[in-house]
Length: 145
Image (cartoon, rainbow, N blue to C red):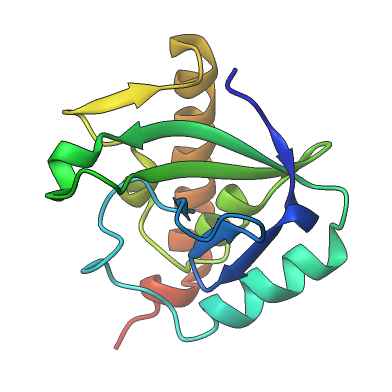
């Protein structure tokens, strides 16, 4: 697994975060669809509340989009998980219907991966179960309009 860091070293605004000491490094709670995915109205509140309630959480890098894929030589975007013991913010967001489960997939091309294939596959299984729960309970993006 990639180098984890305490969440208290980061400043998150919605799904995006950056280390407080180096705001040039971009982190995102979503692997794909971060600009155009459906999202629940309560998402930003749930993220801020979860982080506040989990001050010992760790930021775990999952994959980093190479700077050439972003069109700049000085930028990168790291998809991350926020984990505090058995609690995982990413799964919490899916289980509460904040996003469809597919947003937790890591990008497929031009990325450096920081977690093992097994860790990623286990996480995606949990994502599918969390999404089924949100769909069944009609939460967030799964509310019938």
